[in-house]
Length: 336
Image (cartoon, one colour):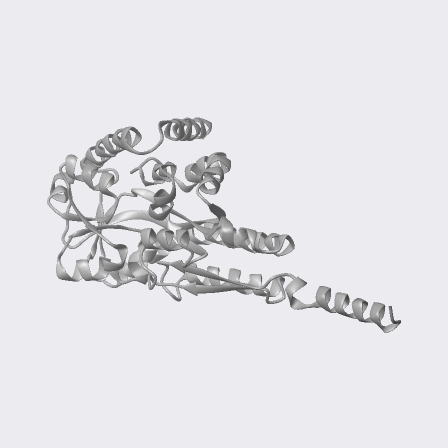
């Protein structure tokens, strides 16, 4: 063997191990969401993406498709499953597409405060993470969108008046649609991306929405009446496919997790504060707030909510999840 051959082998080996192929991999994470571009939620996600890029020396880039351009929540989950998207920020409707346990957070009036929600969520989080992981998804952080109220095209001061209105429900959730119908309501299944068109054309008259969303997306213009009765806190989450996550270098995973945690903390601390402000802004632009709490109508609404809760436990919320959440919530109320 010539003297030059060991030197050549060493040079080739050194080149290989210093090449980009053996450096930490670079990835573009495509994330889609219904969150409107420019909203407080969108800004939080963009901040997270900027932190990902900086913390990983540009190895991880987050590309955000906001405003429903990639479809509504069921569409996003389907596209993640087939690899068109790696991540999404979805509401509980999207999470329920993955596992029925998340339907717990759609039960009307199950929670009376954010404190109750946070206590139950903290206790159930390990199980909920496991349920997502079993289906090939990883939780990056929870997302909060405010408290849901009913916005209506014309005033409905009583439950019986409300039953006469067409109510938006998510298309594809046949069990929930059937429940609304069985309870004497008029559900109108549509994709979330069709809400504004549906309101303007009179396809439905009532919309469950958070004040921030109703203001940001201008839904209140076509539904200028709000029943002053909180239905449920709108929970969501940012998730990534386990397949995409496992392609990321472990050190970069830790950096991504830290930034995602900060985004989750921002959602939890900032979004709840925006409810009252959004209502005030809409009132200044013509929104009428219809009192329900403290009136004779409130009892009828709460009785109806109890019927929904029992039916949902029987139909599609896993009973063990419902019962555990109920025990945690009631224990918290006892402490208070």
